[in-house]
Length: 464
Image (cartoon, rainbow, N blue to C red; front, side, top):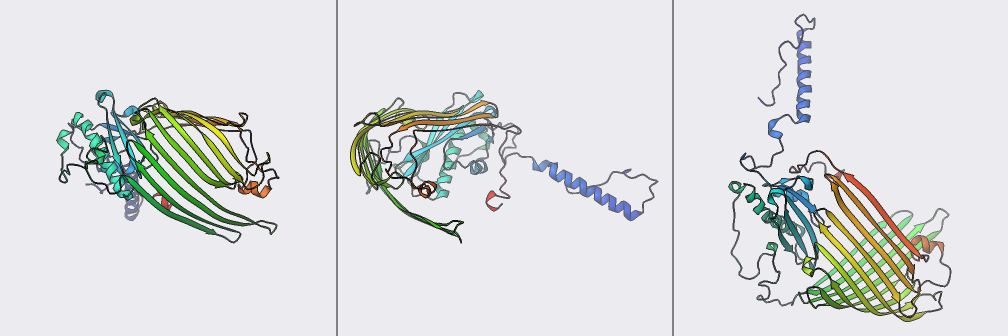
């Protein structure tokens, strides 16, 4: 019986001179050691890591690889816990279904896209589902909606893998006839136009955050109010954003001096974009801000722009090749006279940005160039390139590379007077530089069991 252990006959020599109690102690010790070994080695058949409900030997649950390429809410632990009719694997090479999970902003909320790609025997069975939030849901509602969307998308692969006898369908409410479930994909505006929207797609958000860190030799406080208003439809994209960053820092140095860093930074941005076609859009980008680091009491940028996407915008979550060109003006009021003898000036400028991004089964990659130039003097410019790659070389082996470099010759805002060491160390002012670059390279390799069905929440990192 499970939990009972016995010492086989003959374990101790018959001519042993040990007394009866000694044999009893040794027997109990041997049983304890054997119990510990069985516990740590998982010898009990009931501890096999088989998802509940999949014991049917005739069924063959599909192996699913979840490829999280979105930074938000791709909670693998919750998905593995709630979706039990598939086998979760850790490597794409072991999968029957590759799920590419991406996201992008959508009005006040966010749109999550799940691309289902069938592999091997399920090759050709591809599908895409989306789940869109409106920004008013709590975290649990978002995660429940994402889990439900993923579950619905995996049903067809479970059926194709012979799992039909293990599945059922439950209808949880009446069809509303208009506002269809957003997690089922398709157009988010189907039926929405028939419903009355008193806000006409406008959304507003107000937030206020702050923090304080008080120590004997250092005090730091922050206050950050924000206001955002936006309207997003198929034809228009409007966004207006205001933020303030008020900070008060005090530090005591070893020689008894006190250093303070008090800043009040603010910024107002506005964006108005009109969709011209599936590939072309036009817009106006305006930015009003101050910057202690850039020696500016106030700076206004006003830039009309045009953008072309080689791929339709509907495919933006998976791939995009965008060329963005703007031409406009920049007006600056400086805190201190610049090295060119200006206290304020208005200058024309233009900018070109080209970017390629792809999220595929082999990984993801991106590359881009960014060029800025003042038109009053072509010698004031900056030019930068950047690229990143995450590539699955072979089973379990992944390469991650990123880098950027720029030539900088547009430091027209540099103050004429010398910059103090305190301002440099505190980041209040930066010494001008004619270039900047950075790079990173990494390899990761994983081996062992490919199955990832079991979730164990003991000893969470938050308490260790």
